[in-house]
Length: 407
Image (cartoon, rainbow, N blue to C red):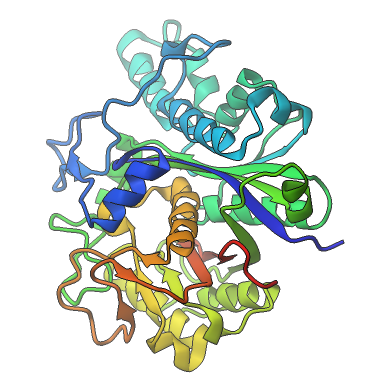
């Protein structure tokens, strides 16, 4: 069995705000979501800003005390609720459909782990709250979500560096396409925390300037936080219940090159393999692709690698296809990046509008790509891809079609 897979619900939380509408409008406007970090003290770091979600709502849980839960659970719940409301399922009916739940994260509830460590040092091991360790585990947020909304089963959690969110969507896509389930809840999330801020600071990967993917003067990445959740269904299943179809997941490719623990292969061979596999899985040629949502972190090594991969995987089309990185506005969401960027890619297909790669005032000629520096119309856009490339050579690509596109 090889079914077409529809996207019937999407929910998103980033520094731009809560919900698809505000995120898409601010993305097209090229607005910056970077602000001074308030979640922890940044005085000891060269970089003081990030894509922090301000005024995050935490109330409204029925089965848990809101103050007990980690920030990651709140991000995930908000994105999930929008996706379900989008889909027309209703929470009770969705539970009866027994969806597979597939999530990607790199940090899980790391802020809770940080609080436990602080209490351990300040109060001693006997008085540090062990409940914080339970919230810290990467599967806890998915379990909280499923218990809160009565979803059966257990979550499948992928922790594969910055490709985690894309891996989660890809594996949910395969589960629906292969007939394992009719409905899947999938996505990715990560909270902003000092642990990861310090880690990227130690790698000297964070910019003290603007995040400038593919710019000749790029100097590093910027961090963010957020969540993206998608509901996937078999196309016939979605149509039989009159569900909205926002787009179609058409293909998924993944590879592992293990070139280096943190530095990408400069030739981009593993990344190109993921792109080629995804296009083959979707039975699409490079000529059909009208937009690439790039991993585009803004570091010198990553952008050079991804440029080489795009040109290799797409041949002559690699220099023509419009490319942009939305990380330039909201930062790198780590495990949440792939899912959030998948949603923005689907939005681009629906509206036939390309989101900008802001701050790229001097596109690097060595990259050899056509960078979208301001939002533009794309009246014939029907197929787009989204890339995610993580530490350790974890590479993943998704191919999307516009609603009503030809399989």
